[in-house]
Image 1 (spheres, rainbow, N blue to C red):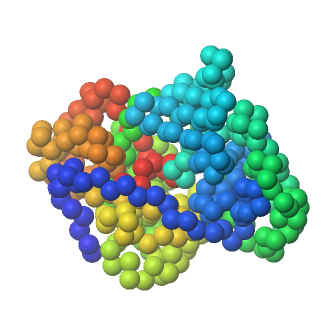
Image 2: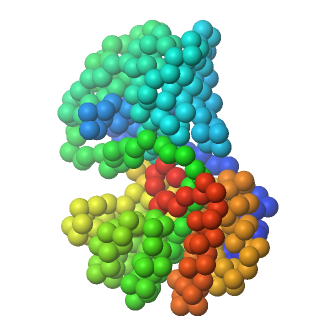
Image 3: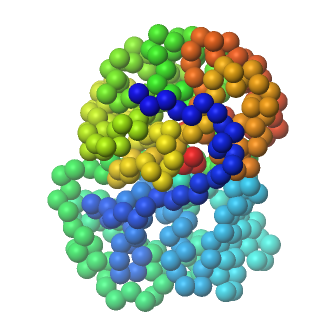
Length: 356
């Protein structure tokens, strides 16, 4: 099995900036003007819990509108020729050019911020509409008045049988909160170690990355992982890169088992390889974790400080801990330092978390 890199220091020398590839959905859910939103496969229109939400980046497609996001300052600016909307991601508020402040529900999904479109459309003279496609799914469209087709005509061009439900539409995760999020990951921990791991992780949400073909071996411990506030993701070894369709089939089979066990599915897979080299699958989200901390790293203050203080400056928020007995002896001290870091928070890997 491919072993992840043992040292974090090399990662701090480079920050790989990658984005999701453009991929057409089997059944489009969001349209811009007379065509489907090009990133609909990974960033669809979301209709859930009475909310209708669209990805903020979709508004970049309209002439005269700019979208600027700063995770560092917790702000999102949507600006047009005659006005702007400035969102505070920490407090869930919106400020416009007249200094009017209003509450704004801000959601994350698929590495993107999601908002209800009505206020944005009103501010920038856009139009938002929804209609049911022939397969019974609700679709949405944003237009600036230049469209030549009615929404019904457009939907007829993208009609599908609807026999297979969309595998990647999920409820948004909720309003953003302040702080810098780090994402601890345990790569393929031994089943026998998990009972010892959970108390050591305490209140630090962690992602357990396991090989999908081994999911049944973890059946006895997975409920405890979720009950303790952690989550599960799939681990993609470099050897799986040569047969991506086989790995995809393994994830789908593992999801069938997981759904039967807990009513949950997993849409995230993690590799220790560079993000740009990881194969992509529609409906699943690739994450890269190239920083792996072993016992020698956790006993080294310099390495711990680099992980907690310097790596976020390079856009690196994912790190893994080995789960062997020797390394576990240093968990308490490591997480104590983690908690002492001002503004640092622990969070499981989600669709909206950094890719690397």
